[in-house]
Amino acid sequence: MSESTGLDDLFSFEEEPPARTGRARGGRARQAFRLLLTAAGVTAVVLVGLRAVGLQLSLGIVVAGVLAVLTVRRVTTALAPPPPPRGGARAPAGEEPGTYNWAARDALRAAINGWERPLDWSSGNPERFTERILPRLGELADERLRQRHGLTRESDPTRARALLGEPLWSFLDTPSRRPPSPRDLAAIVAELEKI
Image 1 (cartoon, one colour):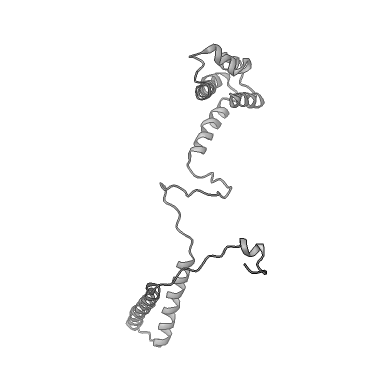
Image 2 (image 1 turned 60 degrees about the horizontal axis):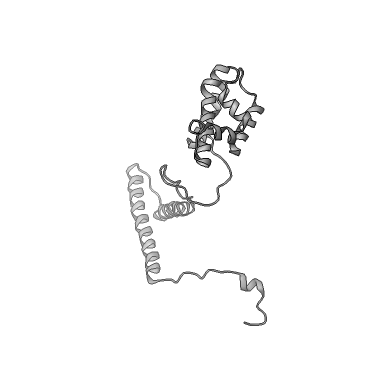
C-alpha cells in the first residue's frame, strides 16, 4: 500500500465495467442495420402514400423525418419505466414506499372492513353487538389462548379465566346491556393482545 491511500480509498467500492465481447459490437451493428432498414421501409411507404394523394416532398425531408421519429421512439422506449408486475406475481422483497393503496383489493383492507362495518352497524344496537361482535371477540380470545397456551375457553375454563382476567372473562361470558364505548373496546382489545 502506498502512503497516500486513505480510509476513504480503502472502503470505497467501484464496479469494474463489464468486459466487452465481440458479440456486443456485432449487436450494435445489427441494431444500426435494423434501424436503417426500418427507416428505408417506412420512407418508401410514406413516399408512396404521399404520391398517391398527390403530394410531393423531398426525399431528404422524408428520410430525416422518419429517422427522427424512429430515434424518438427508441429513446422513449429505453427511458420508459418497467411494466408493472402481473396481478398474480409476488412483489420483490425490499423497502416499500410507505404509502397504502386504499383502492386495491387485498386481505388487509378486507380484514379492516370485516371489523369496521359490523362495529359501525352495531354501535347503537346492543342486540346486534351481542350477535355479531361478541362472538368474533370470543373467537379471537380462543385463538390467542390456543396459540399461546394450548387451550380454549371451552376446553379449560378455569385456566382460561385466569389467563384472560376477570374483566375480559366477564365481558366475553355475559353480554352487556349496551355496546361498549370506543374507549372500553380499545381496553378490551388491549387485554386480548396481552394474552
